[in-house]
Structure formats: structure tokens, C-alpha cells
Length: 405
Image 1 (tube, rainbow, N blue to C red):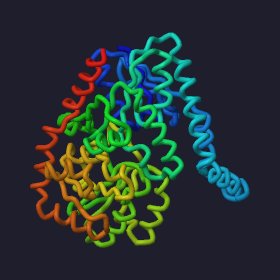
Image 2: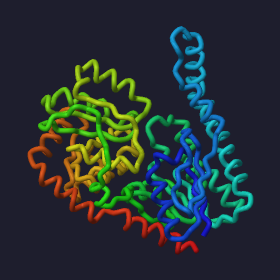
Image 3: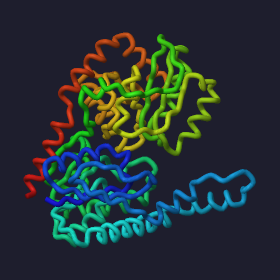
Image 4: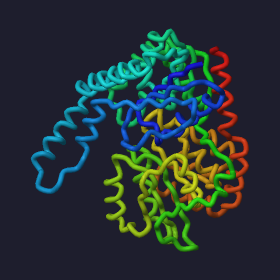
């Protein structure tokens, strides 16, 4: 089949989409992966059967320009930029702006495929489903909706965003031929909202081979840790409601030998760095730039404990199963996690870590509990990674496409 995948962000740091595209390409399908160009780095080579289409979107380019800092003395220009950004975030402005950008994406994807016959359109998340529906009509193709999370319940979406988003999702859900999501909690929630469709659950399990960790790959934190130090790790976006402030506050309650490395990027970074300084933790809390999905396992394996402390502020946070839960256990790193169904379904079932209260004290207790039985939790991680594999998940994806043929 010729499969068109739609992703409304850039491909370099989206491991799930790369894994799915590679699985289908390995199975002999031709995959046209259309995404938004957000980074200037060259197009990565993924597979001989994957045709990458990175598209510049006017709104995204303007946003990147506006977010660049100003040199000292340009306070008037900075104030104007801030005013424009605030205005663009107003619901009555943001929603039309978003849909204009979605339509631009649709037109440019279609133009890039004018000489291609497409059999199936695979939409990654709700922000590509509208465009995907139009493209599936244009090509008389099957429509697949791959919902990585409850998009309308993501942090930062305002009430009007949610009303419009749920209305669109309900209308377009009727048009899809197959539904993909990551766990039974998300499936049941979205079925309750939109009605049932043929569905397959594909967990966010990273591609992993034990030989990866045996490679002589030169990965260095560039931080001076001592042999007796315990290294805690958070990897992912520095976004609101992921418990990042709670994690930093917990560091102030742990002994000096506990060190924290935060790998990633996002809008909260400056605030988190400032919080670290104000608590006098600059010599114990370190911030590392985002790294590629291919290299991430080597950084993860350097840690002793991984942290997944999403806050219960939305259904998406509550029901989601973040990639990092699997990334930690694959590296043999026990996790301290918030006690939510989407996380306990792995951590509780396989005993790969401890479920903790969403407070600094709860995080501290979870860390110390793991340290008291470290070999037990680490061994459970090593056993779980033999069962929870991308190979098993990818077979379900390939079978779904076989059913569509």
C-alpha cells in the first residue's frame, strides 16, 4: 500500500511516529510521511520506503521568529512582540489561526503528492484529522486516526479550544475506518465520547535491543558526579503540570548525594532554572539539552531512578502512558511515578517502580523506597523489557493494515 502519514510537528524528536513508519516500511509498504518543518537540520534518512515531506507553515515560522529574544535596549520592540503573542493566544484569535494553518498544511501536502496514488491516510493526533479527512476524500483512501493522547484534554487548551475540538473529533470520528490508541483507558474514554470503531491498542514502547546498551558509545553528562551519588532523571518536555516543580522541591528534602538531571526543552525551562537557584540546588540539579530518540537510551542508562510525576489536572494526564515509563524500564532504571491508571497499568503490574503522591514528600518517599530495595525493582525492569517490546506492538500495526487491504 501507499500510506500517507500526517504529523503536525517535526519528525526528528517524535519517536513513536518514526517507529510506526519504519514498521510499515519494513513490511513493504511505501510511507509518505508529511510533517511540519520546525527545525533547520537536514532531513534524516529513515528507510528506503519512507518518503519524507517536511513542510514550512507560515504561522509556525512567524511564531519561531517572535519567540527569539531581543538584545538589550530593544525594550519597545520586545513589548510589541509580547503583545502580539498574547493577542495570538486569545481563543477568538487562536482557533481561526490554527485552522488557517491546518488548511495551509493540507494544501501543501496535497500539492506534494499530485502524482502519487494514496491508499490510506494515517493521522497522528487530532490536529491532523481534519486535513486527513479531506485528503482521504481527495485520494479515495482509507482513514486511520492514531490518537496518542486525549488531545482535547491536553494542558494549555482553553475551554473554547475544547468545545471546538470535541465537536470536530465527534464529527470526524464517524468517517474513520480504524482507530489506534495507546491504552484501554484512552480507548474507552474516546469511545464513550464518539462511539465505537474498529480499534487496535499500540503501546508507546520504544524500539530497543539489548545490544544497544553494550555499544561503546561516548555519552557524557559533563557533570562531576561522585561514585556515591544517586542520579535521578527526568526526560521529556519542560511543560506545565508534569510535576517538574514538585521534583525540584523534593530535591531540597533529599540528602546531598542525590543529584537530578533534567533532559529536554520547553516553556518552563527558565522558570525551573530560577527555582533551582532560589533553593540553592544549582550544584545538585542539572539541565541537559534535548537529545535525539536514538541517543536517549544511552543517557537514560546512566541514571539510577527515573521520574514520571504528571499532575492530575486533566483526563489526558490521568489516563496517559508516557513513553518515558518504557524508556526507563528498558534501560533497567526503576521509576517513581504519579499514581494514575495510565501509569500504574505498567508500573503496578510489572513492579518496575513505586507509585507516589503528587507532593515533594511523596516523591522523596518513593525514591527512598526504591533505594531500600533497589535490586528488586531493577530486576523487575529487566524482566519487563523482555515482555514489553516494540516488536510485539508493531505486529499489531502491520496486521491492522493487512485487514485494510
